[in-house]
Length: 107
Image 1 (cartoon, rainbow, N blue to C red):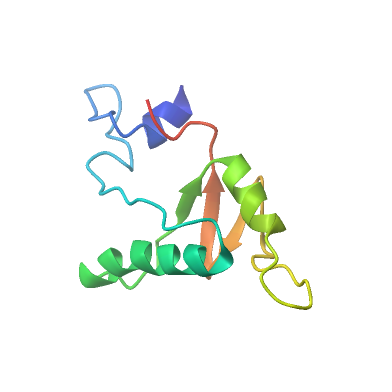
Image 2: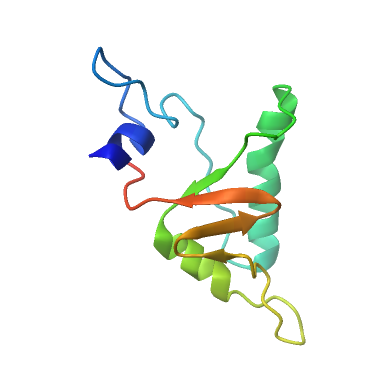
């Protein structure tokens, strides 16, 4: 229940709980699953925050644990090095910002 209260985009808030962090937030469609596509998507997600005046000090990624695991396993270089080595199912860091994983991201 706390994940729904925190992440549920339909949670507009009430007298008993505040609106979720995703309520009213824009949504984006992924450009693909390759490392290049993911890098482009990350930039596209960050840009609206910068355009709105954020210095990104308090920005964080919120994603499903399975998404974090997928990213943690991606190899995008010829030598087989991990593309996103600081992320795992419990969180971590992606593009210099903290990752929060949650089993609930929509209602």
